[in-house]
Image 1 (spheres, each protein chain N blue to C red):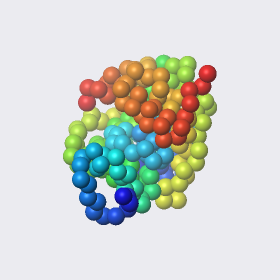
Image 2 (image 1 turned 90 degrees about the horizontal axis):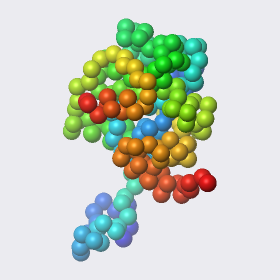
Image 3 (image 1 turned 180 degrees about the vertical axis):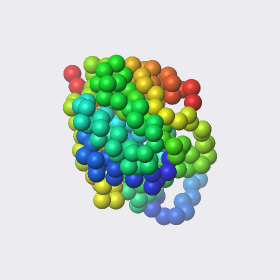
Image 4 (image 1 turned 90 degrees about the vertical axis):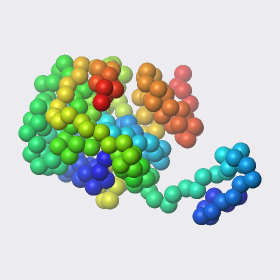
Amino acid sequence: MDRDEIIRVLRAFEASGLEYVLIGAAAMGFHGLVRATEDLDLFVRATSENIERLRAALREAYEDDPHIEEISSADLLGEYPAVRYYPPTGDLYFDVLTRLGDAARFETVDAEIKDIEGTRVRVATPAALYRLKKGTVRAIDHQDAAALRERFNLKDEG
Amino acid sequence: MKADVPVQKFRSIENMNHAPVSRSRLPDFERFLRHCARYWAIAPKVYPRGVFKFRTIEEAQKARANH
């Protein structure tokens, strides 16, 4: 994962006006819980206009990679709420979500604004990340949830 | 034992494990980026290109496990 590539993508997200919230390991990194990852996970607001902003941002970051046009509103707003994009640089990928079952979508994930080199990044709060991770089946998510709970003294909601 | 000195000495591994770890002065996200870069340098992977669609997050995670 190339540092400058990440910054470039986050800058393109902001410039395009993309409505998104960063989740996953990158979001945990913003909160000081550092572990390696190969991907950037994000919820995006599920509207056609916003999916076009996503495509525009990725085109800006990846010099019009033709595969970007395969990211469609029809899919993300319809039968395929999870889309994975592998850019041409080849050392990271993006998991773009519009909803996670009935549990979560852009509008339900609490977020805060972080800054990286003058770029504003919308990042899920520790409590929101904890809620997303604690109920999943992957071992890594359980570890993340435990780390979040301990670091931020989070409690399970009744 | 102060955590911010460059060299720390311990009489046992137990003492070492209980000692506070020196905190980097780098911003959190910068530490994350550097950590990922090190990970990539140690264990690079070859990914496919393009866009893949999934009906559920579980499908997406299963596909990721096959990298």
